[in-house]
Length: 177
Image (cartoon, rainbow, N blue to C red; front, side, top):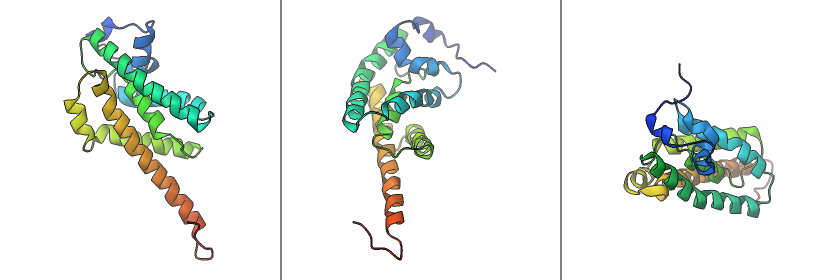
Protein backbone atom coordinates (compact mmCIF):
# COMPACT_ATOMS: atom_id res chain seq x y z
CA UNK A 1 0.00 0.00 0.00
CA UNK A 2 1.34 3.39 -0.94
CA UNK A 3 1.32 5.91 1.91
CA UNK A 4 2.12 8.97 -0.18
CA UNK A 5 0.27 10.16 -3.24
CA UNK A 6 2.02 10.03 -6.58
CA UNK A 7 -0.18 12.61 -8.31
CA UNK A 8 1.90 14.29 -11.05
CA UNK A 9 0.41 17.72 -10.22
CA UNK A 10 2.34 17.60 -6.95
CA UNK A 11 5.64 17.55 -8.84
CA UNK A 12 5.12 21.30 -9.30
CA UNK A 13 5.33 21.87 -5.54
CA UNK A 14 8.25 21.67 -3.14
CA UNK A 15 8.19 21.12 0.60
CA UNK A 16 11.22 23.40 0.82
CA UNK A 17 9.00 26.28 -0.34
CA UNK A 18 7.39 27.65 2.85
CA UNK A 19 4.11 28.44 1.05
CA UNK A 20 3.86 24.92 -0.36
CA UNK A 21 4.91 23.39 2.99
CA UNK A 22 2.08 25.20 4.78
CA UNK A 23 -0.47 24.60 2.01
CA UNK A 24 0.30 20.88 2.21
CA UNK A 25 -0.26 20.94 5.97
CA UNK A 26 3.40 20.43 6.87
CA UNK A 27 3.46 17.56 4.34
CA UNK A 28 0.40 15.76 5.72
CA UNK A 29 -1.59 16.51 2.57
CA UNK A 30 0.66 14.13 0.66
CA UNK A 31 -1.11 11.14 2.23
CA UNK A 32 -2.46 8.83 -0.47
CA UNK A 33 -5.73 8.29 1.40
CA UNK A 34 -7.76 10.83 3.41
CA UNK A 35 -5.38 13.81 3.08
CA UNK A 36 -7.98 16.08 4.72
CA UNK A 37 -8.05 13.88 7.80
CA UNK A 38 -4.26 13.83 7.92
CA UNK A 39 -4.23 17.61 7.49
CA UNK A 40 -6.60 17.92 10.44
CA UNK A 41 -4.37 15.60 12.49
CA UNK A 42 -1.38 17.78 11.58
CA UNK A 43 -3.21 20.75 13.10
CA UNK A 44 -3.33 19.11 16.55
CA UNK A 45 0.25 19.96 17.64
CA UNK A 46 -0.29 23.55 16.48
CA UNK A 47 -3.56 23.69 18.43
CA UNK A 48 -1.90 22.26 21.56
CA UNK A 49 0.75 24.99 21.39
CA UNK A 50 -1.86 27.69 20.78
CA UNK A 51 -4.20 26.42 23.51
CA UNK A 52 -1.71 27.78 26.06
CA UNK A 53 -2.19 31.32 24.75
CA UNK A 54 -4.67 33.87 26.09
CA UNK A 55 -7.93 33.74 24.10
CA UNK A 56 -7.24 37.07 22.39
CA UNK A 57 -3.90 35.79 21.08
CA UNK A 58 -5.48 32.50 20.02
CA UNK A 59 -8.18 34.37 18.10
CA UNK A 60 -5.63 36.67 16.48
CA UNK A 61 -3.39 33.82 15.41
CA UNK A 62 -6.37 31.83 14.08
CA UNK A 63 -7.54 34.87 12.10
CA UNK A 64 -4.03 35.21 10.62
CA UNK A 65 -4.09 31.52 9.68
CA UNK A 66 -7.37 32.05 7.83
CA UNK A 67 -6.34 35.27 6.08
CA UNK A 68 -2.89 33.99 5.16
CA UNK A 69 -4.52 30.66 4.21
CA UNK A 70 -6.42 32.34 1.39
CA UNK A 71 -3.09 33.38 -0.12
CA UNK A 72 -1.17 30.13 0.44
CA UNK A 73 -4.00 27.92 -0.83
CA UNK A 74 -4.45 30.12 -3.89
CA UNK A 75 -0.70 30.16 -4.60
CA UNK A 76 -0.33 26.39 -4.21
CA UNK A 77 -3.38 25.74 -6.40
CA UNK A 78 -2.03 28.05 -9.11
CA UNK A 79 1.43 26.50 -8.88
CA UNK A 80 -0.13 23.04 -9.30
CA UNK A 81 -2.57 24.12 -11.96
CA UNK A 82 -5.39 22.41 -10.02
CA UNK A 83 -8.10 24.21 -8.02
CA UNK A 84 -8.59 22.80 -4.51
CA UNK A 85 -6.38 19.75 -4.96
CA UNK A 86 -6.89 17.26 -2.12
CA UNK A 87 -3.28 17.69 -1.00
CA UNK A 88 -3.92 21.34 -0.14
CA UNK A 89 -4.97 20.96 3.49
CA UNK A 90 -4.14 24.30 5.13
CA UNK A 91 -7.90 24.90 5.11
CA UNK A 92 -8.29 21.86 7.40
CA UNK A 93 -5.62 23.24 9.72
CA UNK A 94 -7.48 26.55 9.98
CA UNK A 95 -10.82 24.76 10.31
CA UNK A 96 -9.67 22.76 13.35
CA UNK A 97 -8.24 25.90 14.97
CA UNK A 98 -11.63 27.57 14.52
CA UNK A 99 -13.42 24.52 15.93
CA UNK A 100 -11.28 24.57 19.06
CA UNK A 101 -11.77 28.26 19.93
CA UNK A 102 -12.36 28.44 23.71
CA UNK A 103 -12.84 24.67 23.88
CA UNK A 104 -12.61 23.06 27.30
CA UNK A 105 -9.23 21.46 27.92
CA UNK A 106 -8.75 17.73 27.69
CA UNK A 107 -8.28 15.02 25.10
CA UNK A 108 -11.98 14.18 24.96
CA UNK A 109 -12.78 17.73 23.84
CA UNK A 110 -9.99 17.66 21.26
CA UNK A 111 -11.30 14.34 19.95
CA UNK A 112 -14.84 15.73 19.91
CA UNK A 113 -13.72 18.83 18.02
CA UNK A 114 -11.77 16.71 15.55
CA UNK A 115 -14.75 14.44 14.86
CA UNK A 116 -17.21 17.34 14.58
CA UNK A 117 -14.97 19.26 12.20
CA UNK A 118 -14.33 16.21 9.99
CA UNK A 119 -18.08 15.48 9.98
CA UNK A 120 -19.01 18.95 8.74
CA UNK A 121 -16.08 19.08 6.32
CA UNK A 122 -16.99 15.73 4.75
CA UNK A 123 -20.82 15.98 4.81
CA UNK A 124 -20.83 19.65 3.76
CA UNK A 125 -24.38 20.64 4.75
CA UNK A 126 -25.87 23.76 3.19
CA UNK A 127 -24.40 26.37 2.75
CA UNK A 128 -20.98 24.69 2.97
CA UNK A 129 -21.56 22.54 -0.13
CA UNK A 130 -22.87 25.53 -2.08
CA UNK A 131 -19.83 27.65 -1.18
CA UNK A 132 -17.48 24.79 -2.03
CA UNK A 133 -19.04 24.53 -5.50
CA UNK A 134 -19.50 28.23 -6.28
CA UNK A 135 -16.54 30.14 -4.82
CA UNK A 136 -13.19 29.93 -6.60
CA UNK A 137 -9.59 30.73 -5.76
CA UNK A 138 -7.91 30.67 -2.38
CA UNK A 139 -11.00 32.15 -0.75
CA UNK A 140 -13.07 29.32 -2.21
CA UNK A 141 -10.62 26.72 -0.91
CA UNK A 142 -10.74 28.22 2.58
CA UNK A 143 -14.37 29.30 3.04
CA UNK A 144 -16.00 25.87 3.18
CA UNK A 145 -13.57 24.71 5.88
CA UNK A 146 -13.93 27.98 7.79
CA UNK A 147 -17.69 27.45 7.82
CA UNK A 148 -17.30 23.76 8.74
CA UNK A 149 -15.09 24.94 11.61
CA UNK A 150 -17.75 27.42 12.73
CA UNK A 151 -20.46 24.73 12.63
CA UNK A 152 -18.22 22.37 14.63
CA UNK A 153 -17.34 25.18 17.07
CA UNK A 154 -21.02 25.88 17.73
CA UNK A 155 -21.73 22.18 18.31
CA UNK A 156 -18.72 21.73 20.58
CA UNK A 157 -19.60 24.83 22.62
CA UNK A 158 -23.24 23.70 22.79
CA UNK A 159 -22.14 20.33 24.06
CA UNK A 160 -19.85 21.93 26.64
CA UNK A 161 -22.63 24.27 27.76
CA UNK A 162 -25.13 21.42 27.93
CA UNK A 163 -22.84 19.26 30.03
CA UNK A 164 -21.97 22.15 32.34
CA UNK A 165 -25.65 22.96 32.76
CA UNK A 166 -26.50 19.31 33.44
CA UNK A 167 -23.88 19.19 36.18
CA UNK A 168 -25.12 22.41 37.77
CA UNK A 169 -28.84 21.63 37.41
CA UNK A 170 -29.36 18.55 39.52
CA UNK A 171 -32.63 17.72 41.25
CA UNK A 172 -31.06 18.75 44.56
CA UNK A 173 -29.57 22.09 43.46
CA UNK A 174 -30.85 25.29 41.94
CA UNK A 175 -29.94 25.90 38.33
CA UNK A 176 -27.32 28.59 37.81
CA UNK A 177 -28.60 30.63 34.86
